[in-house]
Length: 173
Image (cartoon, rainbow, N blue to C red; front, side, top):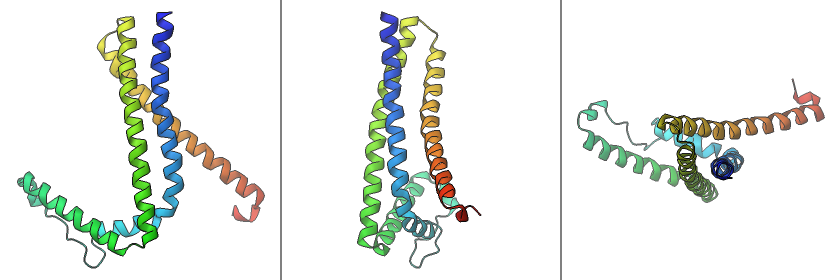
């Protein structure tokens, strides 16, 4: 029975990682379509293609990392202020909502990951496996969680696209 419980804890904890990763992918991809204009403007500011964009930081500042860090933070703040000044209130609301959702799901996923690592360690101790097995299991399970979300998203998009082209054959060419 101890082995069964150890495996239940291990698998349940990793499901607490896979679920939030997948849910985040769904919610954030839905909202991403609405943020394309914001993302384009942000990229233009980052690459200094917008009037008033902060200039790039010289690579020479790598010789003085603390100064580079300060300059980078100032440039980032100036770019963020410029971006916000050029967005409509609706675009600002969308961006804030997107960042809040991403942060929330990131925290839930991180919490699940920490529990999953603990349960993976418990499984390792139960079977008295070598420590490298912990790292192998942790990496494999994390990759499986991410792959699950990616493959499910890809499959969903494929189903939608196939249905769209089947009902509107003129759109397929």
